[in-house]
Length: 234
Image (cartoon, rainbow, N blue to C red; front, side, top):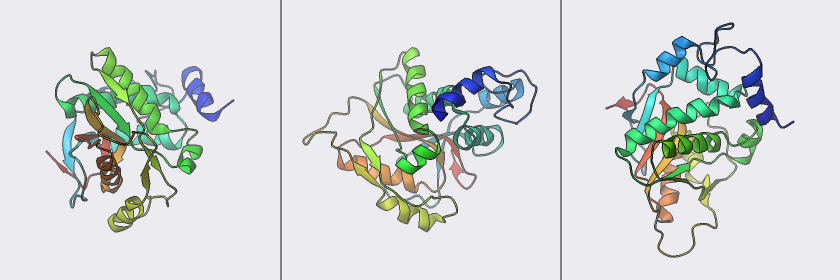
C-alpha cells in the first residue's frame, strides 16, 4: 500500500497523538485535541514580511507564527507522515487565501513545487495536497478557484541549515517553467496566489514569483500557513 494512503487511513482508524500538542488519549477532531482546535481556530491571518525581503517577493500573508500547535502540526504532516492532516491544514490555508485576496473573485492557486527527491521522501507532493483541499474549501464558500502547476522544481540542496544568502543562492536557479502556458499573451483568469507552508527568508517564494512573471502570471500575493518569528507582522 502506498505510504501516503496508509498514513491517511492510519489517521482515521488508529488512536494517535494530537498533531498540535502530541497528547495521547485525547478525543481528536481531524487529528487535533479540543485545545489545539481552539488554538488554531483563534489564529487570524496577517501580513508578514522578511527583513530584508528578496527581490521579487510578492506581499505575504500568514496564518500565524511558526511555533506552538501550528508548528507541531506542520512537522507531523510533513515529517511524520500524518497526511490525513492535509484536510484541516488545507482548510486553514483557504482562510489565509480569502484574507489575502480580500473579496470573492476568481483565484488561481499556484503551490510552490517540490523537488522529486522531496516528494519521494514525503510520499507525494505535500503542497499539492494542501492546495487541493484549500481549493475545495474556497469553492464551497462560493469562490471560483483553479489550481495550476506551471512551474517545476529542479534538484537543489536542502534549505535546512542554510543562512539567508545560502537559501537565496539555492533558490535562484531552482525553478523552471513547464511547457504550459502556451507562447503568447496569457490570461490568468483570476488573482494569482502563490501557496507555501512556511515563510522563512522568502527566497523560494521570490524565485517562483520571478519565474511566474516571465510567463505573464505575476502573483498578486503569497499565502502561507506559518512565518518564522524574524518577520515583521502588520
